[in-house]
Length: 397
Image 1 (cartoon, one colour):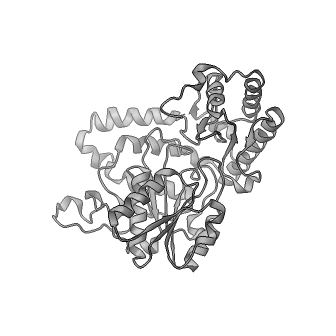
Image 2: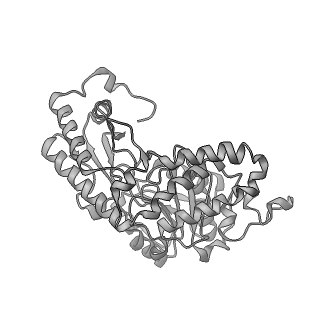
Image 3: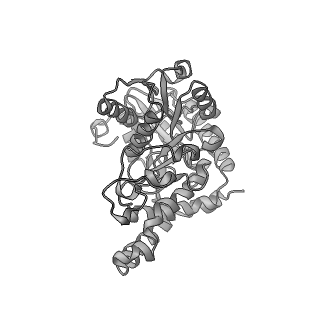
C-alpha cells in the first residue's frame, strides 16, 4: 500500500500553489538537492576526472536505465539513458526502418507529438528512399496497419487530450502485418502502469522530466526488445556506443545489446539528479498510483463540469481510455489558463484551445483538486481572464 502523504513530503512544493502541471515538468524532489551538491562538490569538485571510475559516472546510463526499466515493464539491461527524446526517437525509427528494408510506410497518427513527426519527416528526407509518413486520426490507426507498413510509431498517451492507445492490441496487429512498433512513453512512464514486455513492444522511448521528476532537460531513455538488440545497427554510431570506446579504434564496432544505443558523453549531473528522483518509486505501487490518479481526475471532471459549463471536456470520459491528465476546451483557453496561474493553480495550454491539467498522486491531494475547480469557477463567473496581460502570449505556453 502506497502512502501518498509520505511521498508528498519528498517534494519541494511552493506555498500557495496547486500544481497540476507535473505532466509537463515535475516538481523538485528534495533528494535532488543533495544529489546535485554531492556530484558538484564531492564527485566533480574533489574527484575531478577520477570520478568517471571512482564515482561510477561511466555506468550511469546503464544503472539508471535499469531503474527506468522496472517502471515500464522492461527486463534489466534493455534500457539506456542519454540525449534528448527527439534523438531517441530518431535512433529507434532509423533502426526499425533498417530492420524492415522492403517497406516504405511509417504509420503514426494526427495527434502524435509534433517532434516525433518532425523526426520522421527529417529521416525520410535524409534516407531519400521513398518512405512516406501516414498520420490518420488516432481512432483509425488500426485500419491502416497493412503489408506496406514498416513501423507503427505512436505516443501511448496523447499529449493534448490524454487519450490512451491500447499498446498491446496495436502491437499485436502490427506484428501480424509484419510491422515493428515504437512507443513514445513521455506521458506514460510514471503516470500509468506500463509493460512493454507483455505488450511485445519492439522499441520504447521517453523523457524523464515529467512524471519521473528528473528536472528540466533531464535525459531521455530508449528500450530495445532483447531479441532485436543484437540485430540493430545504430544510425548515430557514437563513441560510447562502441564495443571498446577506450581502445580508440578508427572503425566503429557496435557495443553489445542496448549499449550500442549510447551516443556521446552521458550528462552526469542530470543523471545523478534523476537517479535521486527515482528513489521515490521504490515505495510506490503502480496499481495504487493508477487508482488514485483516476480518483483525482474523476473528481476534477465532476467538479469542473458542475461549476464551469462553458468548458468542454476534451479528454475521453472513460478513465480507462485516458492517461493521468484531463483537458478542457474553450476559445479563450490561453487567457483562462494565465488567470489560473496568477491565482496559484498551475496547469498549461496547448494550441489551439486546450487547457491541460496533470494528476500526479505522488504529491497532489483531493482537497487541492476541489480547490482548483473552485478557483476556475470564480475566474469563469467573473470573466477574470479577460485582462490584457492574460491574452499576451509568452514564449512557452
